[in-house]
Length: 415
Image 1 (cartoon, rainbow, N blue to C red):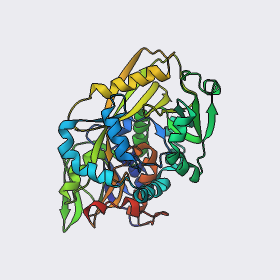
Image 2 (cartoon, helix red, strand yellow):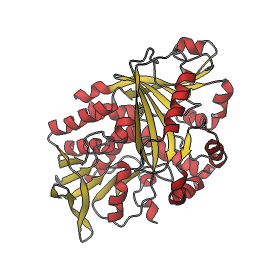
Image 3 (tube, rainbow, N blue to C red):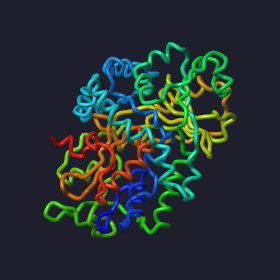
Image 4 (cartoon, rainbow, N blue to C red):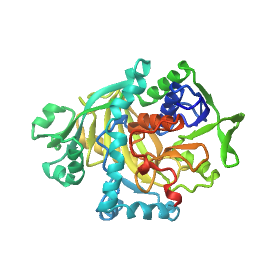
């Protein structure tokens, strides 16, 4: 490896914490910064799924037709804050331009190596630590109202089969035998085997931050205000608590990495997908495994503190508070899909998924600045976070990653 370096990691979500741990294990002096604390953003409120099956992006062929239909349907899982449409338009146009067969295959080829070994990567990150207790082994069931609904998703399932994830189909009354929580309208369950999920995403991130400090790293709650460069290379990070010198820095602050990238002169095409969850307290029923409710496009995950129902996409602002319609839609599909389910209360949450127009994250050095990107993971942040951290740590340590990093090039939008 290279000589030990002084490295600052900005952002204590899963990508930042994992990067910091692997860098520390490589012998570097590591400081992890976050203005709120470990796992305070999207890493807290996600569905908790290690979604190894998530190799098919949203922008596949047919997106334009489907997207327009969804925007006009009040019961669809896609929402747009129309007053923000002019600002979003450049990103939307490029996002839609990738919805063709050639680009879809390119994106899928990029997603496969970074998500399909997620469970093993999280196990390697946590082996021998208390954080390992948060990882559960599980299958995942895709709940359809009919076999026809499953067949309508054949595009994605064909790619999953080719990647070794052929589903086991359960139909008719056997669906409720496999998952008693499902109501009678669900007549087809496509089960993908050998995945995993996190039993408490917020607790998991706090435990990982503790692993970092126990292994000799440092966590500081501080707001990053600027990056200091000398002759084009990073020399320090300016915070509300003063300047911190460094040899390298890692941007892993999700959507909040965008303004810092601008300070490096790099215009990143990235926007926030506003994602929601309802966390049901003291539910009367729990699924045997995580479920994907395909009609509502949200995940349902059994967790230590209740039942997490997370999903929907709302394009809009990172400033405005939650909209009522996405939360109402999740409530509607919960009642429809799980008709016998009762619960004491439902915690509401809104977070911001950092999304690129090609549905691939930014991972790697930004120019020759010594600043590395580790963000832009859209719906796969938790899934790919452990591996992203290892890849960035390898690059900084002078080890060549054993996979093609071209799809995630942090400079690709500047060309």
